[in-house]
Each structure stands twice: as C-alpha cells, then as structure tokens.
Length: 545
Ligand SMILES: [Ca+2]
Ligand SMILES: [Ca+2]
Ligand SMILES: [Ca+2]
Ligand SMILES: [Ca+2]
Image 1 (cartoon, rainbow, N blue to C red):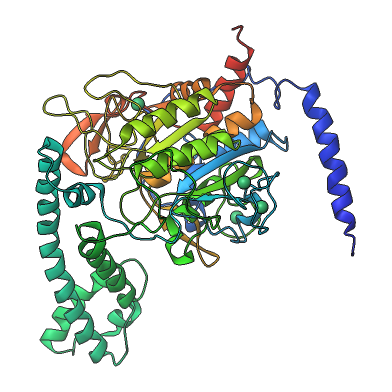
Image 2: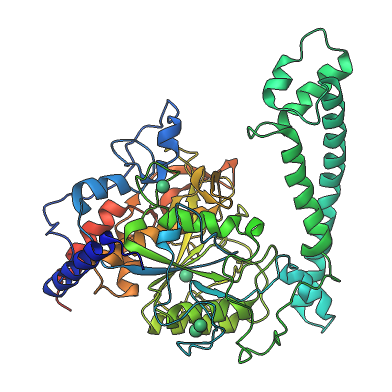
C-alpha cells in the first residue's frame, strides 16, 4: 500500500484540533465590542450594476460597504472568523438529489461513519442499507403528479378539498393553452430564422448579424427571436426548456392518469418506511435543483473554481432525495426529516412546498420530532408571488407548515420560512416571484441571480425562494458551528432578531401598484445577516439560563 504522508499530517492536525475543542466553550473570540448593522433604511439604490465577479457572490457581500442586501458573509469571515475552525455541522438537504462527485462539493459530502458502502448490509442498523451520503426515498422516480392531481385521481369523496382540487386542476390545464400556442409560434419563429441564417439553431450574435436588407418577414421574426436568446444560450435550448415545462405539466404534473411512484411502498402507511435506495444523486440530469441548493451552502470557498458556499469548511452535506419533478409526498418528507434527525443533522434545508397535502400531520409530527432532537429546519416560502396571510380574505396554507390551521399557534420553535430578495436595495428589493406573509414567512434572504453548482461539474445562476432558503441554512450552520451549545430554537430566534431591518415601502408580487412596508411582510421584518448573527450568538451564548 502506498502511504501518503499528508494523511499522517492531517491526522495529527485533527488530533490537535480535537484536544483544543474540549478546552473551549466557544470557537471564536469575545465579540461584544463589535457593532452590528442596525438597519438599511438609509441606503441608496445602487446605480451601477455589479461586476460579474461580484454578482457571482452577491449574497456574501456587505450591506453597508457594497450597498446590496447581502448577508455580510465575507465581512464575517474577514473580521470575525478569520482562520478559526468551528465544529463540523451536518446539514441535510432534502431535495431532488445532489451530484455527489461534483469537484466543488465532493469533499463536503457527509459520510455515514458507521456504514460500509456497497456491501449490501445495513451496517449501522438504522434501517437503510449502504446509506453512505444519505438516503433516496424516491428510488427511480423523477416525475410526479402535483398533489392536487393525486387528490383528483383518488376520486370524489364528497370533500371540499376534492372540489377545490378539481377546480384548480381545470384552471391549471386551461392556463397551459396560451403557453402551448406560444410554444408553437416561437418554434415557427425559430425555424424561420434558423433557415435564413443557414444553421440548426442560433445565438444572439447570429441575430445581430441579420442586416437591414433582410426581407420584412425575417426582420419581424428576428425581433421576436430575441426572446429565445435572452438568457445567453442558443435558441433551441430555450425552446427545449419551454417545451419541457409545458409537456411536463400535461404529461405528469397535471395528468390524473400518470403513475410516478416506483418504490413499492404503501403511500398511506407511515410505518411502511424502508423503501427507495442509497443512490442520493438519482438521475444526474434531474439533480440540478438539489446540487444548486447544496452548492449555495457548501461549495468550496476560494478554490478558484465556481462559486463560494456560505459554510463550506464548517459543514457536511447529507443528501436526502425526496423531491421529484412534481409534488413531494408527505410520507417521504416526514421520513426524510426523521432520517436526517436520527443520523446527526443539526440543520435541514427544505427548498420545496405545495398548497395541497393529504397527510400533513405526518410532516407536523416529524417537525416536532426534529425539535426534540434539536434540529433547525429552514424552508423556502414559495415562488407564487402571494401574500400567504392577507389582511382580508382567506389565508393560503402552504405545506410544509408549523402552524395549526386557522390559528397563529406554531407547534414547534425550530421551523424558519424564508422569502427571496433581489441584488439591490430600494422598492424593487423583494423578488417579484417571492411569497410573503406576516404570519407564515419569517425572514428574507438573497434569492435572485444566485451562482452555484449544477450537475456535470458546472455552475449556473438560478433564482427562487429555493435559493434564499439554503443561503439562510448556511448562516444557521455557521452559528451552530461556532456556538454548538445554542439550541435550534435559539438559533432560529438569533437569525430573525439579528437580521437587518428595513422600514421602507417595497413592491410585492412584482405589482408596482402593490407596495408594503418591508417590516410588515414577514414575522421579523428583517433579512438575514451572518455578521450580525455571530455577534448576537456570542451575546446569547454568554447569557445565564
Ligand atoms: Ca444503514
Ligand atoms: Ca453497508
Ligand atoms: Ca468554489
Ligand atoms: Ca411558522
């Protein structure tokens, strides 16, 4: 056997660190002299756009110095953390699967210390065989129905929920008709332009080259075709994604006859819990969402490849695959939360959600179970541009949720819901797609133009409350890494109380006629800030209980 000397060296360093840890109560120096960032009321709207290198890490930029609603991550590293190591925190990503061999992620993947890979045995006797990096509760499934479609397929039981599901299914299918028409007409535009430029497809540069001498119908098609290349990609890629969305809705999401489940378990029996497999990436091409979410938390910092994670040196990522292209099952989510809590996760990220649920109690029970095991659950607020808690009219219940329906009572203190921000202050600060609500949304965090890992070793900008949630989970992991004695409920409170307050009118739902005070659209009225959070964590950790 070839022995690598550096292994011996790193083993020695690890020993030294371990002995240090026992002597310390905290991993950082006294922070009481540092002044937190109080509010962002006075900050001007940025005039100049961020340079590409800054945009790629804008959620790490500073509120004051960079005048963007970033989380002051870089400032926290520079002024507080420096080179101090914290305790490793296991963060479970309940998602679509993670590319575990991505160069910027692979060293941050959690490895189950008591399980041997690939021997067909459940070595640690946790019920799951060969669960090295987590568990895949979906098995071979990629596509699924929406929950409302499942309720319609189940048949008329006379319930109000069934009637609501039938109505929404009809509405959603009707909404697809104009999209189908637009898809067909854009395909025509594509083919016309492609033929004219004598290529299979085209880019923006090809369009720019079409001169004023082009025939009138080509000039018209050229103008329309710019919509196909606005993302910087080739036109046929845009059409492929568009067609994928429309056909996916018709073929499975909204198709009452579609059968997605391939795991062979009884979906209505929560005690039938051993199913799926140990492949936590699933199909690589379907692992984009989970890989991006994991990257936001944990992609390696300052290694000159791709983006930087909020907490890469401080975390191990556990992949729990439970979110298909369609709506997740309550049973999978409940078992995924329990798996994470039972196997050492201290933070769970849940960038998923839905508006119908058949077994929401199982998820509520799992949230309470996670609370008992001191696990913080961070979830996305949803991308439907809705006020979840309107002053008049009916409340909109989104799942998962920690609130008892029809009340403001929460069942646990470990559940934090996150809305999404744009990379600029001012009235357009809230992402136009972000849900909000002064009962069901707790904080905001960066969620537009977020640069992170995607499958095949690549990187992309993506947007969504799905991206705001892992930014927040990364901050939570940092608090738990440097202040491991704080409980999940304390960490939740610190994240909310230490956020940056904004007492200003902002546009919500992308509707310029609907402006609200930012302080009124979440329970905290704030957005997440790592620098502030560490200062508050230092203070709270010194308080007498
Ligand atoms: Ca096992
Ligand atoms: Ca094994
Ligand atoms: Ca990197
Ligand atoms: Ca809540």
